[in-house]
Amino acid sequence: MSKFKLFSPLNILIFVAGVLVALAICLLTIGQGVGQFLFGRSYAQSELRDYVASVLREQVNGVSCQAFDTDKNGYVSCDYTINREPGITRSAECAVWGVDGFLNRGCKTRLPLLNGQRN
Image (cartoon, rainbow, N blue to C red; front, side):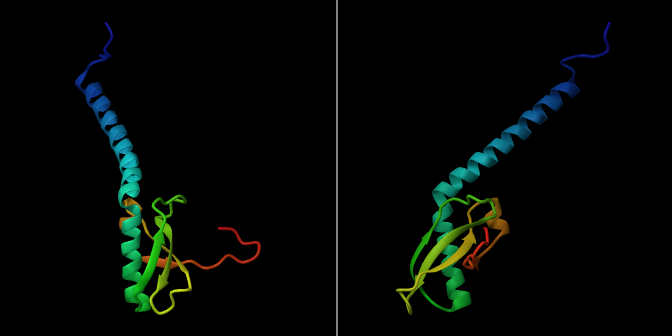
């Protein structure tokens, strides 16, 4: 008779743990995508308004941010204008909603690419 039992308590425990880990990964992936769709743009815009008020000491006139972090760096691209110079559009990268957004806070200035430079 074989000593290996297919339905031993240890095998069942390992199977259940594996299923729970797979389920958690799926939920995090789906949750982040849905969360960015629902909250990504407004979260980034809020971060941008705080950044402009605290760092530049200006008030935002208009703002437009991407909803999804396509390059997975924790930031989305935003364009904005300030009240003092409404005709000049500025760019920044602001923290995105999700795990990366809670690790990355605020915004950072985007520098223009020079000839031959890649993102």
